[in-house]
Amino acid sequence: MTPHFQDLGCIEYQEAYRLQIDLHDRVLNQQQPPTILLLEHPPVITISKRKAAKSHLLTAESHLQSLGIDVQPTDRGGDITYHGPGQLVAYPILPLAPLCLNIRRYIALLEDVLISILAQLNIPATRHEAGIGVWVEDRKIAAIGVRVKKWVSLHGIALNVTTNLDHYQHIVPCGLTQRVTSIQEILGHDTPTMSHIKEITRQTFQDALSNVPKSITP
Image 1 (cartoon, rainbow, N blue to C red):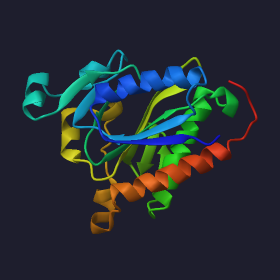
Image 2 (spheres, helix red, strand yellow; image 1 turned 135 degrees about the vertical axis):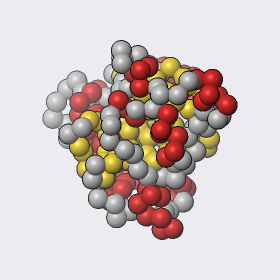
Image 3 (cartoon, helix red, strand yellow; image 1 turned 90 degrees about the horizontal axis):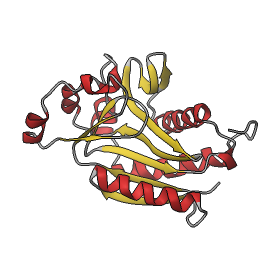
Image 4 (spheres, helix red, strand yellow; image 1 turned 90 degrees about the vertical axis):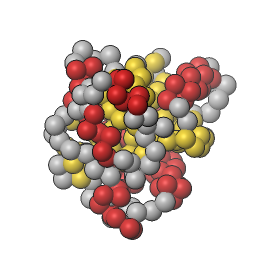
């Protein structure tokens, strides 16, 4: 599978969600090739429908608004998370059946993509027993939250590049006590540009989707 990539720059969360829904219908009806959106969001905290997720918001929404941080509900999996400038978000709108991916294997593929991106930056990242996502030692550097509707995926991954990590103090990220990190925190002045990381991301996704083992069906 060769996906089409669309770079949206910095886009509001709800606007990107509406675009995802439109693309989902088009991909489902084979009116649009599989598409991966690459983007950043203005500061926003998203809260899933998981029962405990709202309790992991630590700051009143009125105060967050005064800080320029929006709060939005989301229908992805996972818990609560933060998006903001300097964080690379990728939303793959992919039909999973042709790739013989069930949800578990799809999440594993996203983790593999993130680990590979970071390896190309000489950052040794791994999975962690604490939960889904990608970690550098005991610090979470990338979050994953997906939804699969009629076997076409929505939502995706968020990789901290030069993200303002102070904004995470307003939540319990993903409901976990482990702290978060970013590429900038690890590499300092050697941090690549966002455009360079987007190019690595494009190539890594292309390689991963071209080499998915066709061993099971959803």
